[in-house]
Image (tube, rainbow, N blue to C red; front, side, top):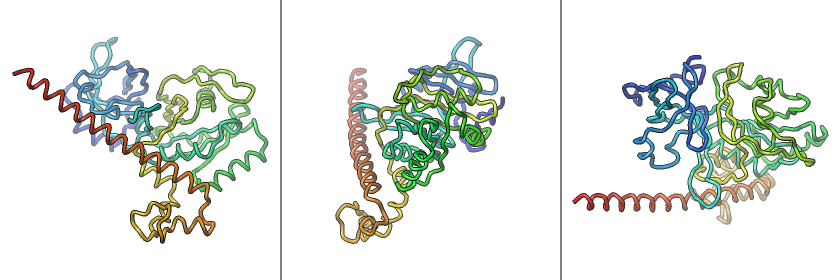
Amino acid sequence: MNLSALGFDPWFDEHAEAALQQGQSIARVTAVDRGAFLVRNEHGETPAELAGKFRFSAQSIIDIPCVGDWCCVEFHTPGSPAIIHGILPRRTSLRRKSPGRTVDFQMIAANIDVAFIVQSCHYDFNIRRLERYLVMAGEGHIKPFIILSKSDLIEPRELDEMIASIRHAGITTDLLALSNTTGDGLGEFRELLVPGKTFCLLGSSGVGKTTLINRLIGRDAFDTKAVSETGEGVHTTARRQLLVLDQGAMLIDTPGMRELGLLGTSEGMDASFSEIHDLSLGCRFSDCTHTQEPGCAVLAAMDEGELSEGRYQSYRKLKKETEHHDLSYVEKRKKDRAFGRYIKSVQKHGKK
């Protein structure tokens, strides 16, 4: 397998020329698990670890390799881990706010062409959560595609109503319903997997992502657990990994996400709520918050029934959340830099 089959194209090649040092070559990160890495090049897959200088020079978790990254790697004797010295610029990326109270980014994957956002028809369907995933994909400049799994667990009429509710919410993203049990929709899904392109599965625990992968490769290569009486699956995927399918496409599986906090998603908001963004261009004030200002085109559209109140309220909630987290993140980085300067000062005086 050559690097182009792994997604390496002229865009990455151009950046690699400036990044590679003597003795290094290009490889792609195919798995990350608690600080351990697997990388793959034209010769195969091997464990890898970060070079000490690279690890300590990282300013943020964003600087650490994630699944899908292209890296500058030094290979040693067979059986010893490869050393990662740096990463190439990311063309696209998926990231979210770290779970819990920590206001920082968590990298999910990089250099993805299409993100399949998977929701179960039976128990997991939630338009507000779907909007969050769409904002995340939009911020990372990744094309989203909605997958409604477990379609066999509801009646066709219910599925039609579900799809209609998505469209009524203003979501125009491409969509496919499928069932891992009956096989409905799997043929259409396989046709979406273009060789040489990288795809990602996103969704809550138990929506059928791992089962879908097993169906694609034709065997139970990855563990799954039986669903409960409610139809809710049990989370089994514990790490992010990139798989090269037989047809030549690459698919990244990710653990289910219980929290999907937004951080640094202003572009994603504009892309996912494009109708509100377009309306805002007609507001009287360029800094309109779309809450109470006179001449607000967004509020006028809602009053006239052109924009649903539910869609507007969702936009306001997500925008308020991301602005709050953005401000907290800026304050955190200021404190981190101040602490870094303090440490350097102590070290400098200690040497005297």
